[in-house]
Image (cartoon, rainbow, N blue to C red; front, side, top):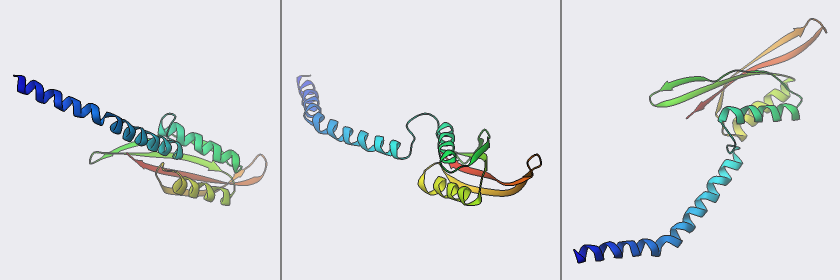
Length: 140
């Protein structure tokens, strides 16, 4: 009885001796993960909201117009949740291509699986404009 109590107390003492080291390691990990969240802009809300916010910010900066942002399509394949986001942008070709590049290469939202360009005409004004339907796939 006394031996088991003694062993238990020795084990607890070793935990208390290692506590400052463990705390330091945990703080380093916290800083690292916080930096990842900040870098990939995943610190405030759902992926869908953050994606929409990023699209809107880029659209304002590059004179694009977001015509629609549909609800994500969910698909489960062998324990993986695959989400597809579809949105429509309107603007010039170079801005849209630059947006696609930025979205796929500079962020970690997922991969662009389809970009469909369509030239349309506004019959009221008689002007043509370019519209792109973009589908982004996110796994997780």
